[in-house]
Length: 224
Image (cartoon, rainbow, N blue to C red; front, side):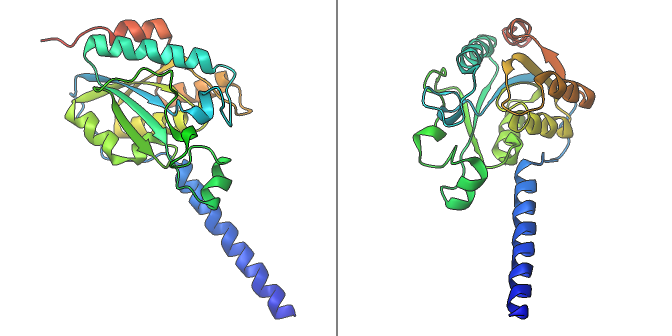
């Protein structure tokens, strides 16, 4: 009996360690190769504005959902007017019990809740990226497409300011991008106040911009 209890305890410890490592990998920002410091382009990255979070039947609703989507649409309009690429990033997790437990069954592959909020502006020129980690750069396609467009400056908005937005900011800074965060287009459901999170972004080198500032800058076309 004692051996059985020891075996069970060992399995629980190993299982807990494995789960902890898996979660740590999923939420940690990525590193990546440093980008060319002379890239002149700008891009807009919108993170996780999906039905499960901002939609009318959201499983994890945000009180600011309508404002966030409206602000995102204004940013999209400005970026397209300026000729800058727009990246719509969404989390799509494997649809199994383990990932359901990790995420509260949100953003699960093949479910309506994993789709982008239907109120979000969609156009053929927008670039859609799916991810399974907090950091949007966890999908190498993002870095590759930014390189294609010679982007060196990013405007980031979306959800959640304590998780995926935070990790994406860190992943971008780790690569040497100039990062502007749109203050009026981020939100959190985490217990940490948004202003505390913002101070953390700034300490790492991100610059906060109002919605109007970001729109005005994105609307400026590239020099011929």
